[in-house]
Image (cartoon, rainbow, N blue to C red; front, side, top):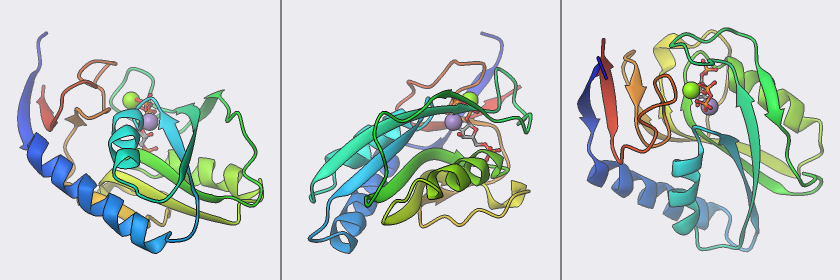
Length: 173
Ligand code: PRP
Ligand code: MN
Ligand code: MG
């Protein structure tokens, strides 16, 4: 392991913020059922933690879209490796992501999902890097706005590693 990881957001802060987001979503979806869509692989840790803090009924589905491969730069080519199992027809959908960076992944994905007839669709991301945006993506729920650094942990990888770190760190290369 050549690279070093420096702490950016400690575990307690990440969890406290997810708690707040869960509360906010529970209030805004009172009386409804929320259908969470996890964008694999990065979204998986955040979605699990978020789902546990939502108090209205929750259903979940998973989709795998990849644009980075093992590099640190988005290729701009978005691949659907695994599609959803269930229809979105009439559902109140929240797409859950670890990070919106260039916005290419979500721009593409939201466009596809919107055509599947959800009753509503929102986007919730743990991290947002607005400085890097090349595609206009509206984010409804944001955990943290972060600077333009290569971050790992809580689902985010560098060459597939570090997803399991319980905090957000910066990779120093
Ligand atoms: C990462 C991240 C987001 C996307 C954000 O996924 O998890 O899905 O890139 O980048 P963008 O806004 O520039 O498109 P990645 O393609 O690395 O796949 P992974 O989730 O399996 O790591
Ligand atoms: Mn991803
Ligand atoms: Mg990745």
